[in-house]
Amino acid sequence: MAGNPKLHYTRGRGKMESIRWLLAAAGVEFEEEFIEKKEDLEKLRNDGSLLFQQVPMVEIDGMKMVQSRAILCYIAAKYNLYGKDLKERAWIDMYVEGTTDLMAMIMVLPFQAADVKEKNIALVIERATNRYFPVYEKALKDHGQDYLVGNKLSWADIHLLEAILMTEELKSDILSAFPLLQAFKGRMSSVPTIKKFLQPGSQRKPPSDEKSIANVRKIFNM
Amino acid sequence: MSGKPRLTYINGRGRMETIRWLLAAAGVEFEEIFLQSREQLLKLIKDGSLLFQQVPLVEIDGMKLVQTRAILSYIAGKYNLYGKDLKERALIDMYVEGVSDLMQLIFMFPFTPPEAKEKNLASIAEKATERYFPVFEKVLKQHGQDFLVGNRFSWADVQLLEAILAVEEKVPSVLSGFPQLQAFKTKMSNMPTIKKFLQPGSPRKPPPDERYVATVMEIFKL
Image (cartoon, rainbow over all chains, first blue to last red; front, side, top):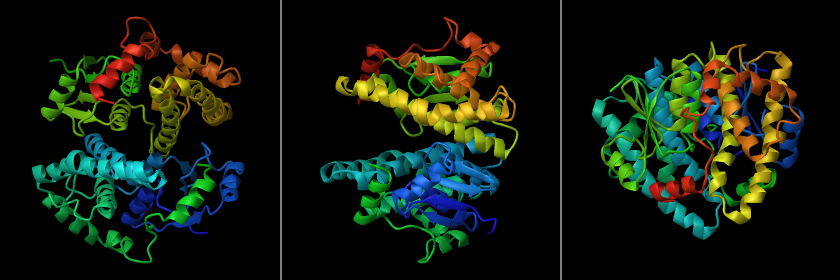
């Protein structure tokens, strides 16, 4: 077995996708073990592999890490994507919390009834356009640099790109009022590790379909 | 204006309470501004003080920090409550995230409709006694040390103590099966800075009541 991190989750995006993005952007190869049915999850639980009985779980550096934010923080710090000091880390944390809130709204959409879903899609679009994207557009405008924090690629940039692409899947012209974010998207998509992750055949997961949602409901007793 | 951190929130626990706990445990004096009307919140938003138009807001070291987790991370890092290396930080992050999930149930409880309150209370008791407290009981038992991580006081200990006390307010006998946590609770409560915070007259806020709920609904237009 290689020393590569090993990810345990379903085949879908969910809470693991940001972790896949960050590892890929950092140029770290990783393996995946997919939970396809309830028994797979039960086995992980019975083995004592899941600290709080939940996935995501990532085996990395001799640890069985759980809690997506803890995992992301560890990867970001390990691969120098977390700023150079406490203050840069604070900015990265704030930016990431914003994109996390936005993506969390999108993540739950497939599980909602049609009428609730339609209302929430409108809310996502409103929040993206009025609350979140203006912040990042302004950050880039204010310092005129390529990256959000410290003139260097960080977790915040990778997370923002993921959020932009995810929101575009809901409304393809969502960036129409944000020229700097459009340029940012172009630049970030060209970063070699990210470009590779965006190509077919990578470990990036597609948006969920009805069948996979039904399976997820079964596995997690939703 | 003093050099002290300045907290802006409503006069109640909510999402700011964990920050009050951490600052107090670190022995850091702070000032508080209490939002009493929606107009006050809207003014803060208009002034550009709130990155994502939300509180908590903590003004510290020349920054206007928002997003609870970003604020807590910064304070923990600054006051040496975040472990000595990446791996200790990973453990602290995992523990803190688990405790946060439990606290989220407590946090939402006052806003549950009356008919669902009993069920939610049972859920809090169940999650505490079956998912979260057993983890920390086991951690303490296995290494036999006073603190959760690295034989040293950290953010994880503060957040766990806060959660224990918060759950006990709702489920007084919740620690009955957890002797290690009982000892932990006593030891932590006797640490000078925490002991001070637990005394009347400290910045610690009382449990949410109907007035708190009404204030929150009015100011945040929920």
